[in-house]
Length: 274
Image (cartoon, rainbow, N blue to C red):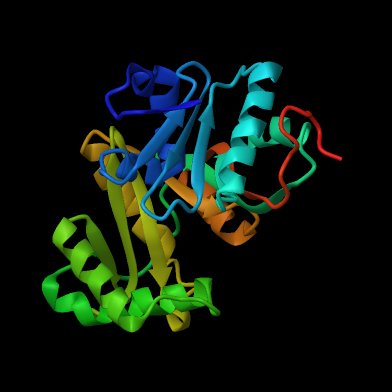
């Protein structure tokens, strides 16, 4: 494994490009100066973003056992430097756990793609592009979403306001307004290559169960396809309601990504740890 640059030909590997959307932050981080990329230029790639948490690990599907052992040595190298959090496809994670008992699965993320959206049950209201005057309500929704997702360690209201400003400037942030004009849901997408990742889907608690989010995703998906992009999204794989919602709209599970930690170090070159 050695450090490589963004211009390295291996990063243009068609198999890698096909999987980039599954690691959304890879696409956003590749062009940044602080991003570090390590690879054997043959079978695998490690990508470290600004905060180095987590480290993104990609490999070809038919990776050899020899290369799996090589990756475990790389995991040891990063762990010895205090970097113990990683992300990879589930298929690779299964191969890694076969030679390392010390890997701990912390979260599963479902990677979905949609080619033909299915219209959900109708609800009142409509999808509208967010405007600058919506900043306050979007900030409140963003902050509430973060608090729900991580009650113990959520972002500050001030930071939520900065995120709201940034996404309003992007032109790809949308809201669902009900029949009274009240904003009840928010959603956006980010373009990575020819994919458009649908994200930040949130409905205020008192308006849930009315079909607003399903219709938001459906209408935004149509916009994305009309623009010649492939709609994709990620979910908490273990949260059945959201997965079912997206499947009913026409999203199909394409892969599973695992966030895992390497709590104990392998003895270098020893194979399966004891």
